[in-house]
Image (cartoon, one colour):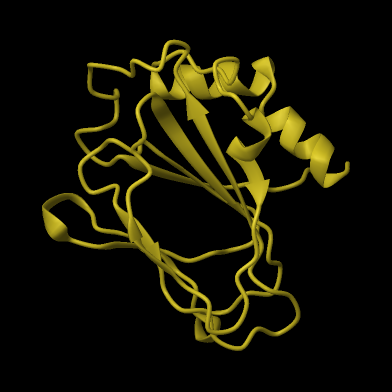
Length: 160
């Protein structure tokens, strides 16, 4: 599957229905002027980092990162760090096929990427997607799992 086809699938009604069930909110990209920019690949090379920021634009309900760097190890840096509830940072290693889903408006969702050090083969290459509510109004209720955390990580594995 090409990168473009994969991004199109991640913006499909089928995939957004799955996320809608997980996050208990309807998701769409039909009200977004340029939906293709809500799902894109980006690369972080040696010495790159991302400053602390929030992804809580009006109507943005779910953010997703999928790590595609196969040979990452801890010496390479580039960990995703959330400020965390009560200012207790949550560190997430960018492991291959790790999918990070989060509610950008939840407490502790501000995040950054630690500096990337020398990489073995490839640059760190995550895919990022942002999903919006239909009217851009957002949700006014807590997520079913938000009392514990607003971050969910999944490691995807192929069936052989």
